[in-house]
Amino acid sequence: MNSGQELNEVKDRLNQLEHKVDELTSHMQQQQASPGRRFFTGFGITIVVVILLLMVIGILQFVNVG
Image (cartoon, rainbow, N blue to C red; front, side, top):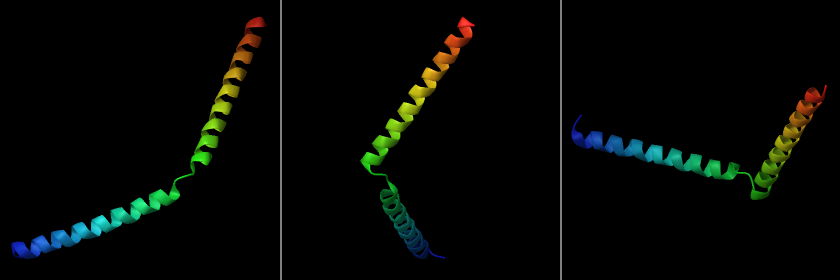
């Protein structure tokens, strides 16, 4: 194989990889959640964490009193 053929094969392979990256990028952009959905997900997680902390504090106070 001469260097010209190798160069063409490398260019072809690079073009294939660029095409695959473009497809993956467009697919990832379509899969992103809307800002409202992300907000409510974060808000729900925050509420759950606060409730768990309150439960732990309550249990610790109950154990310390008893």
